[in-house]
Image 1 (tube, rainbow, N blue to C red):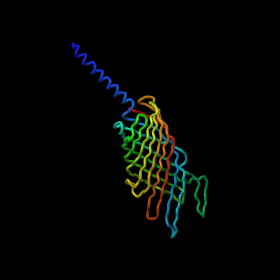
Image 2: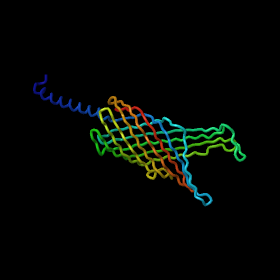
Image 3: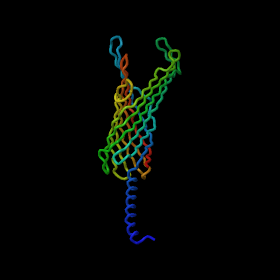
Image 4: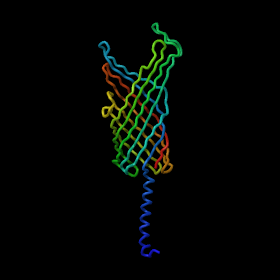
Length: 274
């Protein structure tokens, strides 16, 4: 049986261990190590293709807007791994995949050439962006957090178009793919007005000249904002808005071809924390 002196010495030690364990558990509840947000974005697009060349000694510049046909829900994923109070790794993934087909309802004759009814043009555009950044909180307050980001961003764009115009033309007339990886810089603002609420703002910038995007010259800018409500330490829901802009030019022997695309729209999903 332990002596009274041993029991009196053991009691404060057990109390101290209990307080440390409680404090650690409380900190774990407030600051989860890993957070994963699974959601979708209702994407609307603005698209402009432009070009410049010289024909018969005359400079020609063209800029044309085109539609991809309506909004579309696409998956969106982001995650955060907390290394320490001030250090995080943040991952984002965004995908857009849209196809469109236009079919001729009746015969069309122009300059002696007839394009029969049922002729069609179809195209598909795929766009993916994945980002991994190291985020350091230069300001780490109880309710406000300002982080600066440095990392890498991977982008891939592919466009494919096919036409069946009877005897006039049949075949693929666009089959372009471009991808690359480049350094990305960014900033983050986080607000926690109460225990259950989180407001997060983020902006990032990439210049194609920083990476290996072949002969494409331009930039990619992204900004998003979310408001999240946490029901408990492991589960929450969020809603917000996301915006991307891709603006690139490709130089060739015949001139310059440029593409500007904006992807924007509301988003919503669930948040899982561990």
